[in-house]
Amino acid sequence: MADKGIVHFYTYPKSPKMNAYIERFNRTLQEEFIDHYEGLLFDNDLNAFNSALMDYLLFYNTKRIHIGIHNQTPMDYIIQKSNMCGTDTMTRQILI
Image 1 (cartoon, helix red, strand yellow):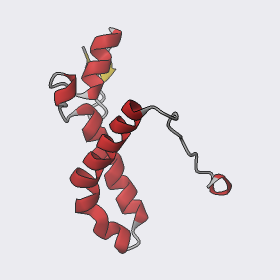
Image 2: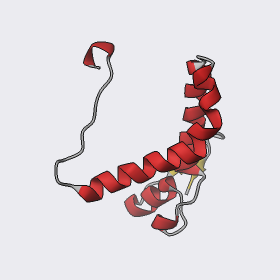
Image 3: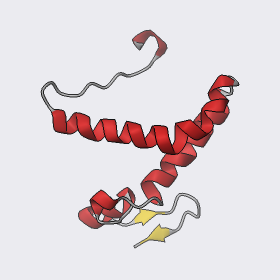
Image 4: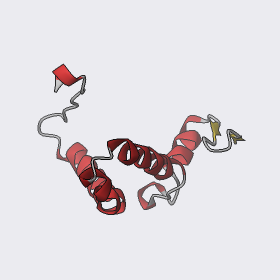
């Protein structure tokens, strides 16, 4: 994979909690995105698939609420914990 410029990230050995978070994210990604857009992969339209994936990941991190972080979006949670302000990537407005 390195010859194609793909970085491979590994989880730490004997860290089931870390792996559980990754597996849960993979399941969510499969159920909420890939199952609905896999036709683009079979049509060999990787640019359209990647574009749709970027849109989904923006939604996932900025609009989709997560029960595990008290019904907040990940971006809202990070902003709250870090005392920072964020921006809305669609409207480029500052959020406080």
